[in-house]
Length: 291
Image (cartoon, helix red, strand yellow):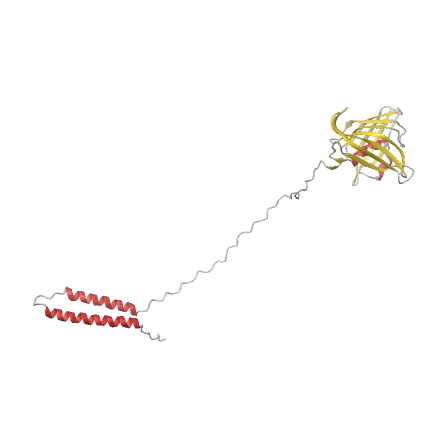
């Protein structure tokens, strides 16, 4: 393939013309200089200097006329894909309570008893209808419920019966009489503090479905109770136990209860007054053994 013709730059032509004129001037100068010099040995250095100067001028003219070398394109480096930054892994944290909310406290709420436990009480009554009375309660698992078995012993004999289910408001509490004080703990809520009001009740086996037995009291003190098995810190609750049938008052008594959270039960109780389901004026019970 033929290369395209070069177009001469005007500036380069001017430079060439000036160089030619300079060379001619130098030549004339040399001719007249040589002729005017006196006869003698020829000096070779001066014409040589002129020739060197003329060579440099021609070289400069050539450099001006030659096109500048075109830089060859360099191969571009292949672009690397951007490196993905590792995404931070979410840290697993323990859920915290919301602001203002309180974390659950295992010492709060209803009393939870374990199956296989037993509580034995010494009981005294006035008038003294029985002597040497003991009441022993045992907790047993009955499906999803916790049942209570009771052993009633005295100097003249003994009997065993099913007291009911340890749960607040359970229908089995209707026929409990005095041994039913063991169920009181199912209605209490921890923690107990001095000045706190306590109120609970259940159906009483009277003449109508509307018969109710209710305890209303207040925590009067937190104190240590001396028992046959040792000393236990307890909450003393003083109140009244009343019986109602079809809206009519049928009787009542004063009751003082000592509840010890360590054993989850009433550890001492004193009832004073005659009530419809007990023909006694005074009844007291005290915990003597816990297993």
